[in-house]
Length: 461
Image (cartoon, rainbow, N blue to C red):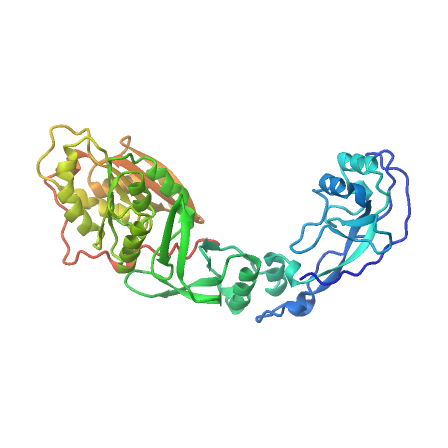
């Protein structure tokens, strides 16, 4: 709640008319007293909301109530904009025929601050040619998260209030110097973002062979089961045990739009279904796989949730085993048909190295190569020329040159000098029907150190 506002009005002075605002008198305005947090909040680790209360002086205009709405609309760029702070307040010094319109001290320091259009509007509405000073009590509730954190954290250190929103969960990647203040930061983020009831920080402790980062709860409830809507689909999952990145929604949509009704999609690293579910909804037949048992369980759940379980077959295999098992079994019949076949490989830390699993996958060549699968393979690149880099790495893994035979799409920058790319190409028949086979390892499981992480630790929030 905004605390009761006190008031003090400066004496009225007039100067010569503003050259930019003919006919509108000007009164000097003192330097605005902007919000400066009390010194005692610096270094605070346990949030004390009362300590942030402070009174500032803001400029105000006395406006007749009969034109109040028109004036506020005309001054929308100059009125005060703060959470919980009204732009219009009572004017006890006058009768009920007037109100005070509070102005932003960053924008308005004198009548010269108004634009020509604003000044003209004020003249037309017969607003008094005077600015008033109004003492406004700001509380914690009226402050932005950046202001609170800047006041608390040591001077000169990076202040961040950025996070990824996953349903009711705010996911932060705090830096080392912010960790002593992590619980306060979590509380501030929850207070200032409606709908956020849990704030977590990704720790550097790796929880399992599936490379999921442990999540430390900074504030709020310890409920990690998130509900997310993306591109018209609903997803539910335990955010602490699976991979999800809301920043990839556009990429999910881009690839799914390439899929037509009746096509077949092999999703090698399906996660909880952000490619598989919408592809099935568009009418495709989907075979979706993920090694993580939790991802596999939520994948099945999301297929049922979106009523596409009749079009999706799910598997809990290593990616290489999925390619050399279900994909190998299904491809011969699909190559003889006319519907397109898509292979999605979204494990950017590792997927390019899995392309060799297609070497010599099939034995008998089809009569033509018009219906060979289209592969969409993701990879990270730190190279100065990421397009060239991912094409060269994909070519090495396939044992076949892809230059001028593929397209490369920039997905997003995940960290300084690190890009996520997608290389798409028709799987060459020289690879698919090659006599060369990839070396078989004793275990078909994906190496633990190369499982996809909950985004790279260097990614900024």
